[in-house]
Image (cartoon, rainbow, N blue to C red):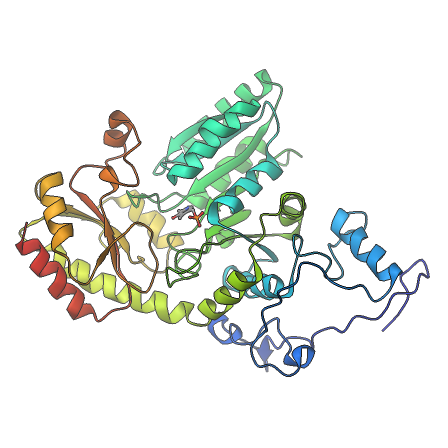
Length: 441
Ligand SMILES: *Cc1c(COP(=O)(O)O)cnc(C)c1O
């Protein structure tokens, strides 16, 4: 290994982890295998089987030249990012191991982790949006995302146009033309196409492939072609991999399925290096990276991601099969029982599983829904999703309380819509719990 950079400045050789094993005799190892060791070499940490938690705010340089070289990477003077660890607002060993492992699930070239799903989303938007620009987004979005795009960015001269999650590619092409006209009037560009699929709480799916085609058709190979970003929190990374369907940037609230134990808050963003570099630069500037302890907890979580999500998905299928025929149930918004041909077509092309988060429409209104919720004995009453435990909530009275009545009605968020996230408990116990609670309605 050379201990000089290309201009002849001496650089202390960095101890590098040994090359990770990603295949055996041509067999590409699966994510669930790689989660136990990828990106961490025990030799660099006293033989510790698991990565230590690196609680430090800064990192010692082996020489002044090494420090300069690392800063050239951090500031973008040298392409390719940081060569080494510099300062904990920029990077750290736990976060870098986590980013390496997270990339595997979505087959992404690069990944970034954040202090929350919302700080991830905010950093992506800050990296892509300028004054006068237009954001095109699917609707509905996670409420805080909608506030960020529609209200906060508005203070900086950014406008938006939205389209319903289930819109056809032709409709989206029309919206993109309209957005381009609006942007040129405002002296800006169409900055980003921002999707969320399935939408919360309706579970409406967005046609990522169709929208990618519409984007390409409208913008061609225009240098200012807007990237397509998608919040994949509800089905990812196990049941939907949007980078394989044309998306450029995938976003997660790692608080949900990836964390999976309802004990941390974090976010992730994945995509090509070219798309990640500007986002990393903003993260370096404002410090939205997650802390080492949270990164360590997420490493533990990723080891069981497939186990947890598979079990939760199987449980949800059993619970929904029971609920579908129950006399107190008016309907279900579950991706395993889609009754719309175009939505089913999107599902078949994009999704490998129906997830474990769904809407249960109880016969009656808020009073009946409250009686059901208050009677639950195993399922806990809480917002959020994707944890090991089953959760239930009433969006109209909780997460979507601040949404104006008219918009709530348009989104189909009725007073009898109970939102359920199924966990990894025994499925028959869950069915018994829902059965007795429905009996109290
Ligand atoms: C929870 C959630 C977010 C926000 O994530 P935080 O980790 O709470 O900041 C964003 N999008 C979706 C779809 C979510 O469910």
